[in-house]
Image (cartoon, rainbow, N blue to C red; front, top):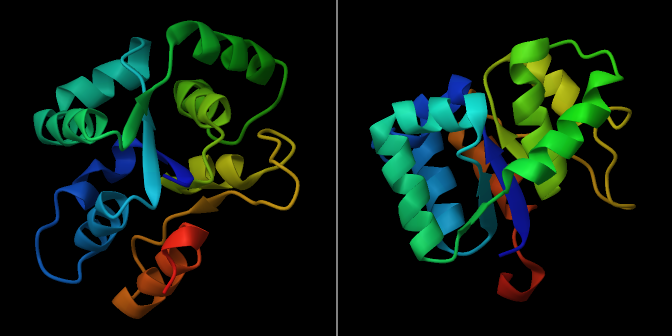
Amino acid sequence: MCTPIVLDASAFDVLKEMSSNSAGVQLRTWIDDGHGRVAYSTYDEVGRQLQHDAKVFQLVLSYRRSGLAELIEEAVIRREESRLDALETRSGERDKQVLALAAASQAQVMVVRDKRLRKDFEDARLLPTVPGSRRWAYPVDQPPAWRNDFLHRRRCPRRLK
């Protein structure tokens, strides 16, 4: 499992897409093949949003049972929230927990539709990255070929053929 990934509630609908070559099918296949690890939390607002969507919550729990998801503890998220409180974000208070989850898990990809949250996620001032890496929003609204290329470039090196 190479690429840590965070799911924002604004894009939960993507994960439920079932038509072939949809953004959701492509993303789930990529995760199922072991190229991504979903970071999630049951803490406070991010936990409520996840548990409110039963289908997505069950999918995340199934990923956890398969070793494809990691529960990030409340204390770690709180620590990141405190750090983010000192910084100005575009997305506002409600999304700070999502950003804290991304920071705590060292997520490199976020599935998100909210443009302000996306900009905050990609902002190295808010979420420092590991040298040589960058944070990216999954291109949910791009054509299938573009999404395939995006996911291919973020595959585990040992799995490349």
